[in-house]
Image 1: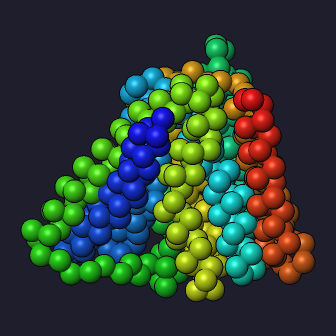
Image 2 (image 1 turned 120 degrees about the horizontal axis):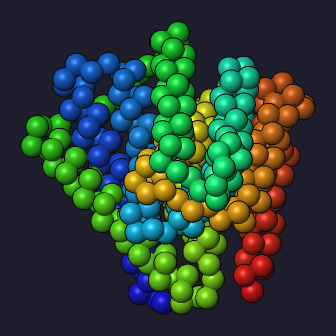
Image 3 (image 1 turned 135 degrees about the vertical axis):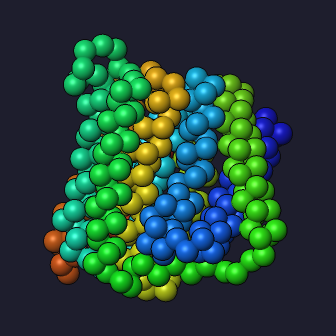
Length: 318
């Protein structure tokens, strides 16, 4: 048990550092190839914070651990929304642009509702399952979201700036290769030892996925949003979370279900209800108090809700 915990922690460190190294190397390489800041930001940098979830889910899907797949994504989204925004909003009230309020937040809600209907087979007859065709639908929606983000960034020159360092070609490829190795190795360690921990503790893979794995793979988002809040950059703090949640639901579950159709445990519906309710709360919070701002008391409500719900989930297992 102790060995599994240590290996899982090592896996999480490898995931986070691997993503960091890969983004560094790939960003410099793209810059040297005269790729625009906009393209780098939309693809490489955006992929960086979602890479841990993507790799963990790819490994879990390949190994036929659907509860880890869904638990990681839905759990990460709830962690992002309730914990990371809660902590960031306590540091500083988060004021955001109207486009985030009227477009990105509703888009993330629609993505969650869409997943609910697809996974429960309400749109197509059959058992609760996220099929390969469902994965294609999610990926098409993801491409549409990327197109929207690209048009938004083109109208905001300030958002197109991506800082990259200058490395030698040898260092660039070393970072890329070591980063990829860290992601693959870390993902394998996380999935294998998460399953081992679930078996040792006598709890479901769902709970491990929703809590430990989800929190661990959300570390890049946590670091990004907390640092942004401390620097009083509320747009990045909240935009990072909303964007990451959309990436998780559309890109990561889309890729995962194409690797292998995923049986959906309907007990995850409760977690989707919580995610949807939290997203609606975030939208409503933009109109209570100061307009387009998440106030500290609202951030505290998000944080408290997550802690209470997680305690309830763990209690159900005992």
